[in-house]
Image (cartoon, rainbow, N blue to C red; front, side, top):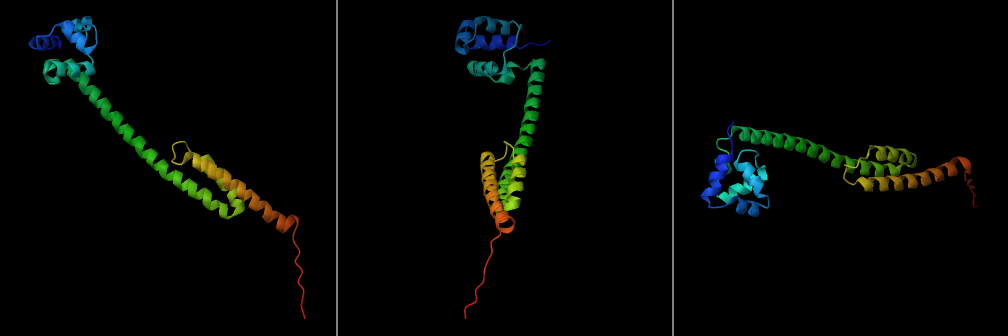
Amino acid sequence: MESIAPQLKQARQEQHLSQNEVATILHISRQSISKWENGHTYPDIDNLILLSDLYKTSIDHLIQNNTELREKIAANDQEIADKQKKLKQVDRQLYQNRNEGLLLLVLALVSAIVPPVGVLLPIYVMWRNTKYNSLYRTIYLVSLLVILISLWGTAIFVMDNWLEPTHTEIYRIN
């Protein structure tokens, strides 16, 4: 197994730094530096970047002969690419929900025109609403207001036509 240890030790010595000085600069223990240079452990990617800057060399030069570490980095790059792809899919879904939120709000408002419809349709709108919709809370508030206004309008319509119909008398003036 090829190791990154010799490259780390050589790069440190070329910069005339001790293990203790490197540890102090990176805010880690001297033992960690020693373990890296003896091949017992590997630095994580953040420390590898800091070492590259400190030693004034590229990360490629530090891991040049280490196929295992290169494979780990390649696998990590692939994992990052996969997660970015999933994130784009989630973003697309959220964007679609933003449009749905606006549509639900318009649907709730338009249903107020016909009082009986304005009682039932906003209930469907609230059921369909999700926290990912834009205007999430606004949709609930508008739907509740439309239901109240529609209940009032429906009550007036029912009372005027069926419960207490008004009688209109027509007088003829000669």
